[in-house]
Length: 172
Image (cartoon, rainbow, N blue to C red; front, side, top):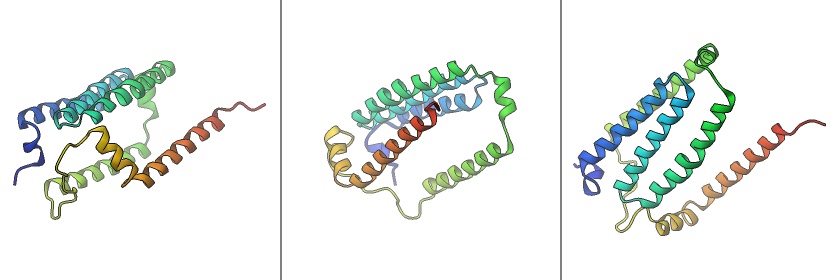
């Protein structure tokens, strides 16, 4: 049985783009300075965007660049630069709680990787015949199949914004 990407993208290109994304992710983890970690995140997100473009999902690829690499990462970079966090401060702030949370997260990802590498029942839905990743297909599925999760996510984002305003409000 061939992997799903054989019909869509050349395996060599897939492996090169995947290696770029993984190298950027390792750069995030191993970076001593937070600014370098954010810049490594840019490399990771551009690698993922290139993977989406290679898999013939141009809308998702452009949203990846515009929203994540363009807006969110610039916000991260500004916050990191405004806080002026030194590596010494980061080393002092590590605790057993973060080590345990990281270990639990690593076990979860290993479990997910084992499910992907040794599938007993396919958990991926069958691909539709026709274009994938276009705005029409994404819009149709977003407002039909995923209408309720879309509205719940909108409500959660609104609650987060209201919570941030309440926390940031100065007391009179």
